[in-house]
Image: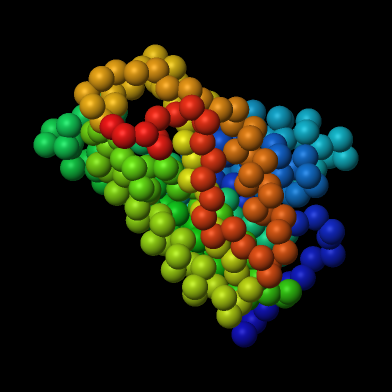
Length: 262
């Protein structure tokens, strides 16, 4: 086995996908504030730059931040992202697989275009697989061996919303991916866990504050939680020793109707 070169740094190295906004931005800021070097991956360079500014401001010692424009659904983009990580840092300690899309909202299953289904699958599931595969290869080959992968699942992994077949199916798939990665990574000290999030306050969940369809057909406003609290949970998972792993955890707005009957 050709081991990747070992760099002389005390900082751990993380890749955060979907880092240009929302949960990805909050996690990048939290990691940088805790002393990590963070590679920001996302499709829009301008939003990545905004996240980089916020992340650097969170670390008074000037935490290292690298922006790499990446569409996770494109294998060539993912290859280029991890080649950049290898060239810059020589190793990888954490991948936060966060990039995702909900797809067209309030579209009945029978009217959902194939192209819309495919876009959600390509981003949420295939993109997560491609990044996990590239991270797995690095973590297996590097010295010291090992690392951690955290997948951003959703409470939709076990309780769907109306008219969300593509998003829900991919988040169910994410759960299977997490279990397989956790099992296959054991011999190489690669830990994998999943955080299922419900109603974090981001642009993606802005509609919750205006009212969203419920299982009983009604429209209701739902409570949201501070996205910084999600980031704290991811940071806790990330900083565990590799001998310990949070396989699944759920963080949700306390008052959201998930645990009630529809």
